[in-house]
Amino acid sequence: MRRAHTSVLTAIALATASYADFTAADIQYMIGPDLELPKGADPVQTMTFEVANGWKYGDNFFFTDVVNGAAYDKKKAIGTYGEAHSRLSLGKMTGIDMSMGPIGDVLVAGEVDYPSGFSPTFCYGIGTDLKIPGAAFFMLNFFVRDEVATKGISFQVNPAWSFPFEFGAVKGSFGGWIDIMTGEGDNQEMWWQMQPTLMVDVGNFWGAPGKIETGIEYEYFSNFLGIKDLVVNHPQFVLKWNL
Image (cartoon, rainbow, N blue to C red):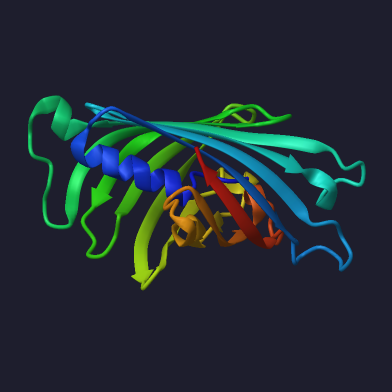
């Protein structure tokens, strides 16, 4: 189960700053072991397609993961997981300056999660863009989660960030996100998921900056989907092609 990736979120943040029309897309390949599984288990492999779009009053983001489920299913089934996000700037729509202290903007935010084989989840709430020194972006969003399958309501807090860096010819970024979710009453445990990512722009070494990136992503999922003591612990190699 994955959420928005740092590179495309960076593009969203840049578009949000100017609200100019833009579209960005990338394809990623990821592979790595789940450290909670027995030794010798097949590595998890994921192909991801992402698209981000910015416009005058907000931004949109969509991704789909295609996952080799061999690590979780002896039948080696292929599963998919996707999300669609949309945000509308209250400041741009009303003409009122929403900035205050570290808050740069306030947005109405919505999200739809659609895992294969399960009913979708609808999220709605408020997003904020924070002004953090050195950050390409730092978002902090607050959602109400409406689980269609269980008809349950829970809540979610989601910080996401990206900090670019440069050492001589080496350019890259440290980014990621954290989801913190309350359980649905007595039916679920509180659960949280994080995915920090360290990426290097390898295309910059041969005159194609921003085209090919590679790096390491680390996923940790505590109480997976609200199931007590079920953990995903998953470092993985990432290769990304920006279209």
